[in-house]
Structures are given as structure tokens and as C-alpha cells.
Amino acid sequence: MKISRKQTFRTLFISDLHLGTKLSRPEELLEFLQHVEIQKLYLVGDIFDVRTFKRKLRWSTECTELIGKIMELAKKKIEVVYIPGNHDRELRKLAGPAFPGIRLDDIHRTCEGKSYLVLHGDEFDGMLREKLMFLYAVGDWSYDLAVVVSKVLNSLTRKVGVDWSLSKYLKSKVKRVIQTLNNFEKLVVHEARRRMVDGVICGHIHTPELKIIGGMTYANCGCWTETCSAVVEHIDGHLEMLEFKGIKELRKMLGRHKKRKKGRLK
Image (cartoon, rainbow, N blue to C red; front, side):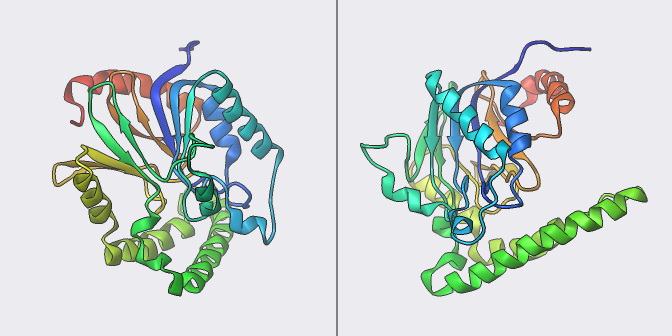
């Protein structure tokens, strides 16, 4: 069945695109944006990988088209809020009256009246202390290498009907340990509670998640290097985690969302 109308969201939250690296998947995000209508867009950090610009920039036509699409949304009076992360932290210097769309964090209010703290999340990551920046860079390079190796292994395993990702496996082991050691989820939820809001929407750890922690909503946008995930606010104010796997899957979500309206996450 063909669905001619676009999927409509009140707000779209995306993070960790890492434009400028070979890991980034701007073509998927561009395709996604071309098939949705939104009223507000949050770019929740690490949209650009500024450190890579200093080493070896990988900028494709799709990257340029994606930036053009975001600028087009802004021209249509769609509010675009950019919250820089650790990979594009240089842009934090621009936050202020001169660039009101660039903010260190923000409070988003849904049409239901709920409020959510929106931030990247690296503020709470002990691995990003200045004394450990060198170790972080080495770990980041190792992860990039794992993704490249993973692509080769994926092409081989899929031929025998197996879907397996080395980078996802390593991330589940290494990043989960880092997350546990730093109590990432608890820390960002604690900050949301301190700000007296209903929850937090963040990125940084590349792990898409939407759940309740201690009565607070915790939402992590994931990334656009592997999962191609985002947090969306529907027109009725309902938050949902979405992993984009093509237009057909997006259209199927229309039906799934309608069925879940009565028993949704509060």
C-alpha cells in the first residue's frame, strides 16, 4: 500500500552524525529528512567531527546536500537548535545572543506540557577529562578501525545468512564498561531531576535508548554511524525511539504508533 503523505513529527532529535569521517552516513539521514515533516529539529552534538577536519577530511556530496537540507528547513521557519558535543565542541564558543540557535543545552517542552533537558552528555563522561584526552583519542581511533573491519566481516557473514557486527560487539563490551564506570545514565537523569524537569534527551554514547529511570524519562538518540536512530516527538507529544531502516520501515511505523497510542510510555 502506498502512503503519499509524509510522516509528521512535532520534534526530531538526532545526534552523533560525525560528518567528515568515513563512518558517517549522511545519505540515510538525508533520505529520512526528505520523507518527514517536522516543526522543530534538535542537533544533539557531534554533528561534525572537527578533530577529523584537522587530520583527513572525508566530505562527500551527500554531506553538502544534507547541510543544504537543514538550511532549507531553517528557511522554512522550522526552529533548528544545535547543541555541540565533544567532537564539535569548538562551536560551543559561539553559543550566545549572536547565534541563538547554538546552545550548551536546552529545555524542550512537549505539547503535553512535559519538559526535557536536552544535552549531548559528554559533560558527565569521566573519560573526557583533560588528563585523559590522549587515551580517548586512541580509543576513538581504535573504534574507527573496528567499524572498517566490521564492514568487511559483515559482507562475508551476510553471504551465509548471518548478521553480525564487530564494531557493535566491541561497543557493547567497551562502551558499556565506560558507561557503567561513569554512571552515565544515572548522572544525566540526576541532572534532569536537579533542573526539575521530566526527563533528559541526550546522545554521546551511540546507544539508542528510551526508558524510565527512577520515574524520569531517559532518551538517548543513538547515532548515524551505525544505528541511524533518532528520538521523535509525535504530534500528540508522545516520545518514540526510531531506527531508520528505509522508507518502507518508516511507513510501517505509522500503523504501529497508532496501535500504541492507548498504552504508550508516560
